[in-house]
Image (cartoon, rainbow, N blue to C red):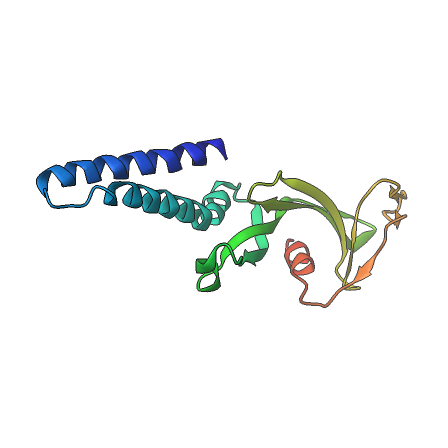
Length: 172
């Protein structure tokens, strides 16, 4: 966040400097145009940063991470987002973390990561029953039996095309 603030301020100073040089070459240019162009450059830098966040973050993830869902944002104080919304947060599964138990091959455990702009990364262990089309968030109080049974989990039935189920069950 701090580096983006520095980049935005730098964009404003750079645009103001360019306008001051242009003002020397074109004598009739109004002086009020310099701060207007500097402000526009700062807004443009902020918008570019918002729209580029998802691609930059996704590109920096390890290859084992599979993005399974994105959430786009629109806001009244950012009217351009109604024309082209930007990705504000997304979920990714660490396919390298998928685990199975020999006695229960249809049940799998994996790590789900929730990433958001201006938010800390959250890691959520999940269990998926591929045959039963259900999943559970693994939290405190969940225990595993010797045969791989999961006790204390709150299973939720989901559609067969649920993005978490498809991502985790698709890993062999």
